[in-house]
Structures are given as C-alpha cells and as structure tokens.
Length: 348
Image (cartoon, rainbow, N blue to C red; front, side):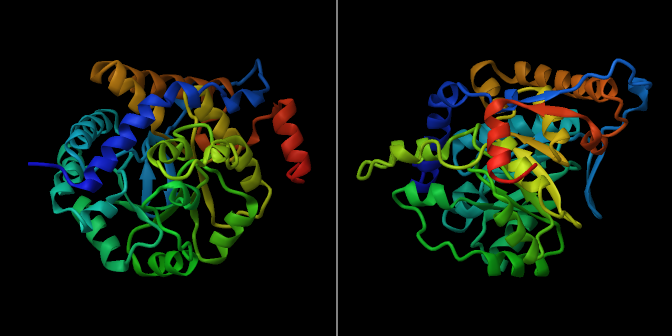
C-alpha cells in the first residue's frame, strides 16, 4: 500500500537526520563544561541508585532515556520496534515521535502501537504538538497506555517547514491540557533550546516538567530548509541556544516544583553526567542512538545502552553521588564561550 504524504515526510526526516548527523556534531558543546575531580569520593558503586523521580507518579529506572524520534511510516515502524525492544531489555523510558499524524493517517497507528506491544510494562512518553486538542491528547495516551505526554514546541521548525503552522499561540492550550490530563505533561523544545523567559512563562502556566532540548543534536532547521524548495532559511541553521546554555538559563531562575530535562547533543555517558551537574533531572538521547541503530545495527545499540548504564553509575560514584539528583553539588568550570554567554545573560 502506498504511504501517505505525511508518512513520506516522516521518512524524509529520518533520511535527512542521517545525512546531516556528522555536520551537526562538528561542535560538541558539552566540551565547554569541565568537572572538578575529587580524589576521595568515599563511596562504592553499590551505593549508587539510578532511579529518578520526575513527578509524583512518574519514576524512571535510569537517568537517561530514549528520546522522541519517529513514527508514522513503515520505516519508522521497524525503528520503533527495535527501540522499544531495547528499551524493554535495558529498562529505559522511551518517548515516541509525534503522534499528530494518527488523526490524519490511520495507517500510521501500527508504527506507534508497536512500542507498547514490545514494551508492555515500560515507561512510555506519548508526543504531540503543543496545539493538540484534548481529544487528540487522550487518544494518543490511550493508544500507547502512555505514562506521560510530551508536548513539543517547535516554532522555528514550523516557520521553515513549507507546510508548517504559522500560528504559535500555544500557552493557554498547554495549560488546559496540563489541567485536564491524568498523566504528567512534559513540554519539550525540538532542538532550539530555551531561555529563562520561556521557562518562566511555562511555570506561570502550570508546567512543571520542561525539556529544554538545546541546539547541538538533530537540526530541524537544516532538515526543513532542505525540504523547502521555495525559500532558503540557511541563516537560521545555528538558531537557538545550546543545551548547556539552556541549562544555565534554567538554573538561573527559581525552580519551585519545576523539574528540568535535557536533550540535544548528548553523545556520551559523560554528557549525561554534565547535564545533571548543570541541573537536569533526566536526559533524553535521540540522534546519537538513532545513528548507531541505522549505521551499526541493533546489536551495536544494545551494547551501547548497556555500557552507558554501567558508565553513568560509575561516574556518579567517582563524583561521590549516590543518585543523579546529587550531581547539582558537583563543582565545575566553564569554557570561554559558555562563560561569556553566562555572564552576558547574567546567569552567574
């Protein structure tokens, strides 16, 4: 059966994400964060507990998880099946790609349903646009028996996307969904980062789980610009804040009940730890894992996920932390560029 236009767009996203992977990762922004070594951590690796409590009814067994990637096509179904199998094996939370397509293309259901089929007891985050209706949100959560809902905010992507939205009045709808849904709601950027102003706006609209998702990972400006044959948005390829910059922005304001999640440009267990030191409660990884799966195969990603869990646990012990949340007390210094950003933004 011929795939729909929406499914073809999902396949284009996968193809272009792979095409631009090496270009995007020429810059590794977490190199601007150096951790201070303590030769006397005074603990054992057995003292470390990797569990993270994100909300009253949302606990994940590992501080990093498989972040939103894809869904809606035959190619996406195979990828989601493999990711869900690995999430189940390694007890990792997993976020889906955007389920907005299911209201337009019933053929896409199976590419999302497979995630819960392969991981019947795992933590799954459904994913929708911030302008989703309550019915769409309820249907997405029901389809996956999701433990949480990610609402992605992607104004920069939409503006470059030839068929994208042009209306970004989202805050009231986000607040409405938070108030009406029975599962926790995570508001997530798609790779352009967040400022303290954005985070404060979300807080005043009752959002307490925020994924700052900074520049440095999958570049949707580059992807959508490649798909746009009418207007060249090349000047926006470096738009937004990096993930370390976004974490510093978040750290500078009063948190209250707000928990910050980091994603964007995470390529190693040390990056996971550095994100935690800068204030992230949990860390999502998408492009790096997808690149391994597509280029090296299932077994390679299986090995990588297992190794990351071992290394994260040992790094926590090295830093004298019995849990991921204790990383906030670890000392660090910033590289010249990141320090300059922090000072100009009055973040430290």
